[in-house]
Length: 356
Image (cartoon, rainbow, N blue to C red; front, side):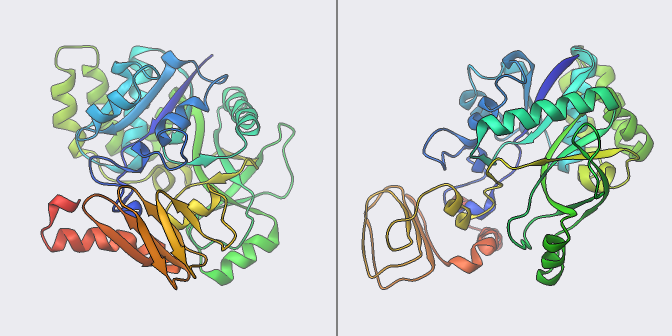
């Protein structure tokens, strides 16, 4: 059976402001010093999915940039543009319908476009196992990450104690981001994994779940599917897609589906969710700092300092994030890195679109 890679690349990455912007989101940034995050995601599929079977779902405002960024890696007609943001159920359903209508059934590998994987060889082996299990069982398969600390920033997957013969666990439930006390309980129990947001299933199987569990979305996808391959395809997508109800694939299907399996992954994963996540991508200097660009520091410890255009100098800083771009500077307590998105909201409220 064919395997298809589907890269979800429609997010804004507001926690990486001021480097990330509406038209240049996190997935189109080079945060590792190697390549754009979306391209690193695509390249990790080597050996599991061929180039001609890779799709990228993005939003219409980013489509041209995405086409340019992924040229040579993704076929131009495999960059699917959403005319409106309708959450992950819609974009996954759109990709599944595209595949079924134009290319035939196969196992879909659904991946966020902006995660970091340190151990690529280990990751590819786990992906191969997940694709095989999804094909053999007709289950919805997800990758869970072994927790290394009691994170309150990740969702969790609760699974059965015993592994199945194929190496997977039956999933009991998905749990949203917990408080610190609960996160400690999950870590000690040994029955919880971090939810990575990576999924594997047959296109035909996920479409059956849409029909059963999300009939309103399925009805919209049917109309779009009926127009695929016709001269009216783009017009129908423009008309129908904004009507699709907003819901995540986790809420809409994963939490309710009858057969969900989890594979455990230990391949150096980070969702690179905010500036403090750079600690998992870069080595610290002798003072505990992570630095990028031209810089001079005196008595500065445990900071993250990103200089894009200008020399950045500091004196006497501790546990601070500093980010310099051409038109904006961010200074933030490192413990409040998750709140950078509030700056984006404040800029919207202040009617300063030139900084968004």
